[in-house]
Image 1 (cartoon, rainbow, N blue to C red):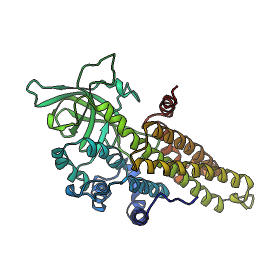
Image 2 (image 1 turned 120 degrees about the vertical axis):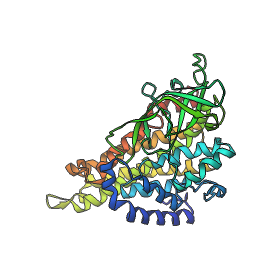
Image 3 (image 1 turned 180 degrees about the vertical axis):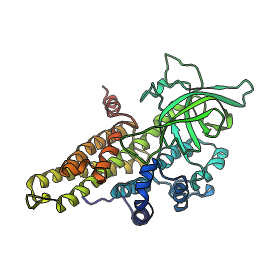
Image 4 (image 1 turned 45 degrees about the vertical axis):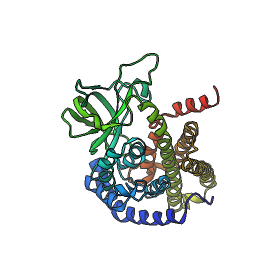
Length: 386
């Protein structure tokens, strides 16, 4: 189905990023997978290309593009098409940047954004804790203001932090006021923590079944001193900030899911045309044609949903429930499509040397992070008055 969501500028950007991926990522990607993350210096290269600063104002070294989400979407589509990733840097631009752009004050932007754009300061965000999962209101990490009011003292632990190994600054969600059982969402704040701070510890680098080049870690904080100047936004307002920024986060996951499903179809088409069974190409069997036709129809539906959602997001009209609905449909759809495409590969689909196998393991987390499918259903149901 023809798409009209992208402009000529987007398509020119697509050509550039496609060539870059083919020349500078695909040849070395197996090394990244063995290492467990992209090399730190690679992020400087992304900074040179301008990928980190598309939405950042020119005064901070960016391109000043008011609506940069679609450029991120193009990058995601091209990465999925090639069966690779840029490691944990997707969090840097897709998750962290909206917080800095929306809630950092002028001095903070001047301090952080130039290095953010260049890749000199890589970032991550730490919300999830070992005992909370999707329940952000249950966060127990604390940040107590010092008696002289100059800094917070941070204590606690976080887990499943993407980009947590290589990050230079981490947005840590912590409780700056005692837990209120009558208002569990109150008292949370966001601190932009320097990872070189005393008491800040990167724990285990977590081994995952997929997303092998994305560094995911456990973090712990023991009496970490965080200057009050590194408080992002207002104290106690973090829950509303998190809710607001879940919209682009969930939309970004949905884009990844649809792009992965589309890539799976292309991988399956290529494989079944080349693979012979009983002297006949697998692609010639009716079952193969029917399965791929079904998959293509599902991806077209997801793509139409994504394109509409991106337009609404640029117009600031995409609601929390809309984003949840899009994420729910597209991630569940991608799971079905990728599974069917792997089946068409037969035993080879289970081998990691084939890109469909990596898509299969990488895709599974789409239904978990950014809010599980069950949480998405709850959000949508609430919007229906249920």
